[in-house]
Image (cartoon, rainbow, N blue to C red):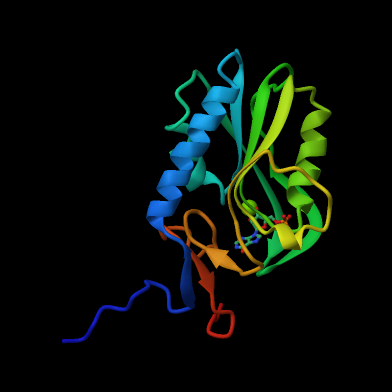
Length: 186
Ligand code: IMP
Ligand code: MG
């Protein structure tokens, strides 16, 4: 009998963060955020589409506080490299003035996306603004920035899964896996 392939995409190299590790860490992050924001009256999780969606929907169910959510869509990537130019494709709906905003993203690579969006949001006068990213490629930062909450620090691999994609593929994987770029065909 033919064995089922280990991964549903043939360009996957190896699992970097397992489903179990993600689950455990997301519970911890939710608890930490709930404790830090227990006195907040207006907590908003603001996710960057589309990569943050899987992380955000799991994270918010582990924050046992009143809160709301909103989304923005920005793009800076084409293929596997950041262009450095960040474009706002669709803006959030909430007027964030006076809100405690936590900006949620899937991964920080060069840091251009988060630092650009942070500047823009600060102009809109939130009460506070913090950043939460599932993954941080710390060695790849090209701008100085603070990630207030992160799930895992990873080396400079190109990864997919748990919301992260390569040309829209791979978002449905329940774990984080590295891409074998030699085997990857568009
Ligand atoms: P930055 O602006 O270079 O920090 O890039 C951040 C954005 O690039 C993230 O929101 C992701 O959408 C995308 N990105 C960066 N690295 C990866 C990766 O390894 N896999 C998938 N997307 C990535
Ligand atoms: Mg993204």
